Image 1 (cartoon, rainbow, N blue to C red):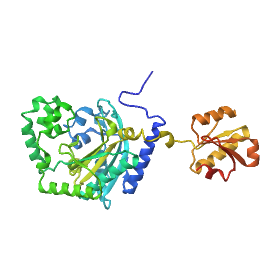
Image 2 (image 1 turned 90 degrees about the vertical axis):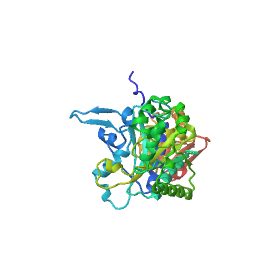
Image 3 (image 1 turned 60 degrees about the horizontal axis):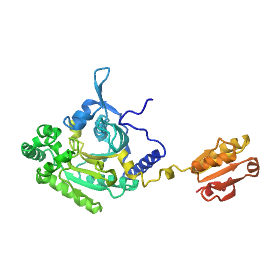
Image 4 (image 1 turned 180 degrees about the vertical axis):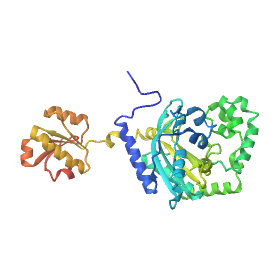
Amino acid sequence: MIKAVRGTRDILPPSSAVWNHVEAVTREVFRSFHYHEIRTPIFEETALFARGVGEETDIVSKEMYTWDDRDGSSITLRPENTASVIRAYIEHRLDQIPGLTKLYYIGPMFRRERPQKGRYRQFSQIGAECIGTEAPAVDAEVIELAMEILTRCGAQNPTLLLNSVGCKKCRPVFVEALRERLQSVKDTMCTDCQRRADTNPLRVLDCKVPEDQPIIDALPSILDYLDPECSAHFETVKSLLSARELKYEIRPRLVRGLDYYMRTTFEVTHGALGAQNSILGGGRYDGLAESLGSKVPAPGIGFSIGEDRLVMAIEEQTKAEDLARLDVFLVPMGDAAVKHAALLARDLRRGGHIVEVSTDHKLKRAMETANKLKARYALILGDNEIEAGVYALKNMATGDQQNLTREQLPSALL
């Protein structure tokens, strides 16, 4: 028997109702913040991610699905979407549109990492990008947007972690200090960190190996190396978050896993997810557009939510059956009733009700099906009901039954 490929999965009812709920809530929040949807291809030229994400990141060096196309070009399934959005921003000259460019996306990403709880090789991300300004006020608003999505979706007590990773002026000084300190301890760290200590010391701070954490905690802090501009930017972001009554924790080791981040970086964790508890991550990426060939500066900030992990965090308290509830189960008795039921179902559905029509014309079996489907009501249609224009509507929870005209039905189903 052919099964789903390792690291992928089928999302089945009723769980899919929670996914639909999350995406519906998310779209409404994005709309209220004046964000617009962008849909990019799921594969791009490999160079986009090598240049944008960074060749020394784990994503590019270990996790991408890459192949040579028939014309000899190297193609990669997108492992993240910020680089793709910036590519589209440059290609279609979105900088010509007045005001900030505020975009969001929902869709699949692909990384060949070890499957574990809440992490898959095909996974879904909800993300946002705000492009066109360096203003710290936008950093605070983007973080507020991310937290608003989590809150409205039902994630309880998420923890916001915050840091600044400096800029191209001050970060090299910190990286050199980090490289120097690592020389004396790298041999006691994991194989990846031994390599990173020489090729990209900043990535050492992103290591998840438990045994390496005490060493990492003793390394220099980026916050001690921020130049006056970056320090002022970070202080303003913090004050604006406090003004919004958003609580946060400062984490000087928070650098995220992508090379394009600068200044503000943030992450949100959730206790329901266990050890690997990150549910959202983001940050500022001024300079990314220029590294991808833009002649016009396009500073920006964004985030991505792991939708798989968000659903996992809220699934227990979100009753999927209620999200996909069946309002009324029509039970037509006879050929004339079948035709009548089709028209009645059409009118009720157009009124926003969820309706199913029984294909079993034996009343007892049809009512058993209505119970199994957890229908709120059953409506029995026979020749007498059709002729009189009065329908028998049964409340499946209480057993109460009332006779109603067609005009009275919609309000009774509310």
